[in-house]
Each structure stands twice: as C-alpha cells, then as structure tokens.
Length: 76
Image 1 (cartoon, one colour):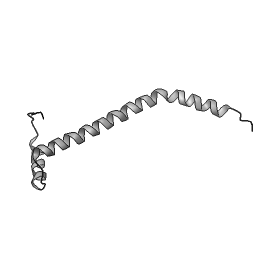
Image 2: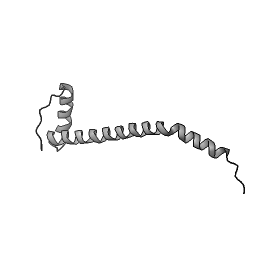
Image 3: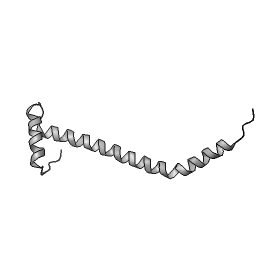
Image 4: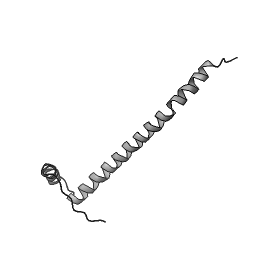
C-alpha cells in the first residue's frame, strides 16, 4: 500500500467526517473506496468517449452501406 499526503477542502473534509461518524468504516477505507469508485466511473466515461469517436468515424460509411442495401432489388 502507498502512503500519500493530500489536501482536502474544509467543506469536503467536514462532510466526510459527518458521514464517517455514522458509519463503521475508517477514513482511510472510505477514501480508498471513493477513489476506486471514481476511477471506475472515469474509465467508463473514457470508454464511452472512445466508442462515440469510433462510431462517428464509421457513421458515414455505415449510412452509405445502408443506402446501397436499400437500393438493391430483391427478387423472390
């Protein structure tokens, strides 16, 4: 485990202390879980952004292919 020093806004620290006073969890565990949650959230947002970018790259090709399929005369 790594040890870090961190500065927290007074309001965030106060709110965290209020919450922790009602929980059976150490401040260290609480902050670790919060960072883990935020990391997972950020990874998801990065994946979403990458998928949107890639989708936009193939959008015109996909529409072109769809148009070609629509123009095909299907014979039964």
